[in-house]
Image (cartoon, rainbow, N blue to C red; front, side):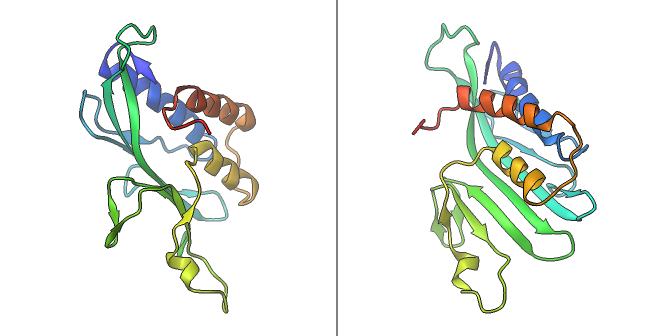
Length: 185
């Protein structure tokens, strides 16, 4: 998303994310870093996770971003844009283990190595399953937040807080797809 100044660019980036998250939680995300060149973080307050509905799942979101000048100073949307630096979307059993974790952190080591590609960790395994699955970095391609929210609302049966959630997620995903700088393959 772009804007006339860094604060406007940040607002245009963060507003659709907050709107999409409102489909599953009344908790509004918080964000830091509304100045040019400043690394910002979007997450939930109090530890970065919220409890979802009667199934008592914990859902965490952390998105790292920066605000920078666009390559085209005549861009009609404005000369400033937000660039995502990484994300972590996690799903935990409220009183138990992490179930899934979608990560993309191209500049931050995970353990002793840099895992620069987007991936998912599948932590919940049944007895007899191959334990290597718990530590594997399964490649995913970049995952939109809306994809994870649809997973929660569909397969995990998280309570829908908006009757128009499909429309909202469709609109916010379309904005993400329109303005992303990630390759369109």
